[in-house]
Image (tube, rainbow over all chains, first blue to last red):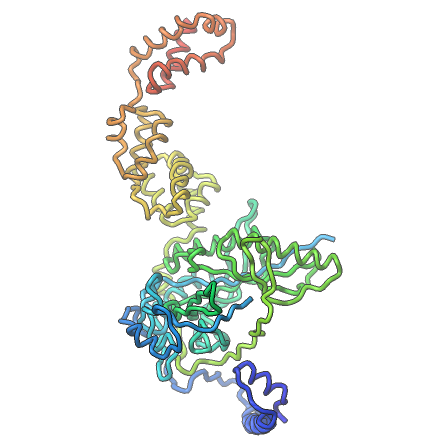
Length: 96
Length: 476
């Protein structure tokens, strides 16, 4: 197996995903398959090849530093499950 | 056993661009919650970030100012974590190929100059702001700050004391202000600092276990937090207990740090290159264009002030710590070419007012002409230095013309020799016992006579002249 059950659990936790023991088995098997397939790339000699960071083959696309109108706050807040004034309201999470 | 601290700082500076880093929303502070937000800020599906060119210009200014190596190609990466201030669930930052690496910032502590090396400078977006409700278990989220451009500046672990840490921060703040890229306001969060701290036996080359400190929003907090944390870690080591690698928060009320428990980030951010943003290639022409626009930097200016104006290092350091103050000084000296007198006045009278109000000199109504005029009035003997100090707060507050103020208040000092001589004679004849003392060799009583003359003239007599006249009369 290219990836362990524990690693899958760890990644799932980081992504806030929860699933059954059955699914865990299945994902571990499937992910291993994908990783083993991708590992074939490691067989290619890439010494001297510049890393590709982007598939678009474009560079230096900028906007000028000009302010444009923001969205109306009503639209920004339209998906908010709860709001107060123009703030989103979420369950309290304090890093302490 | 003697211990030493090993400190590295991570500083975030908010850039003074008009718009955000990846969209056209205003980057200004102070709007109603969520009034400076759009689908890019809130991470709506299908929205695409486009890089603000000025962010790169600003980043290059800093990189050049600290002598960092600029990477010819830099890329943006996604840093993943879940927190309500981050609507996309990742922050666009730089990881593998940051804008610049290396460079150094020179500091001075107790007369010793030292270079603090830099690891990297990279561009990233700020997160939103959370306000926690006191009564209900909820938080209010404002995305106005989401996407405000930041530069993160990571130092080498070259810092050895809280004093050095503060000197480094102050120097960095001075530099970003000189460059006009950040206002450097720690209380408002436009300059923020986290610290990595460990301790080790003095002389050891190995690093101890490090603790990350957060929540220090002033120079004083940084100093207090580091001082406490260093003491805490040394205490643990002396008791034979281990230092735990963790993140700790500074509590300003108690001056202590406490563990941020239950923290899940575990520094597993799963960085990968952001496919929505294309690489930034920075060529020599771009670098030279930015270099040509750099202002004279604080260290160079300090040296020049010492050389050109003959100022002591202390004066030069203080005057050049703020670019507007340094420029104000030079304007004053053009009008009143006695640099040390100008420096003395700025460092005492002017800085007192500025510190009291927490302002920079260009945020006040004070003009170089006012200070030069006041110093001229003293120099010409029109008013005493005491009178000048007395009217200065009013000149500062109202921008009044000092010469006019002197006339209106009748502060012009009495320099008419004949008139003063008459007063002096009067004082001497009223105090024969003191005159005898003087003649018997107690020259110090002259101070008493000068005081009497000042009293009779209600402080308007030119003390230097009075002294001369009295001496002449007494020696006759």
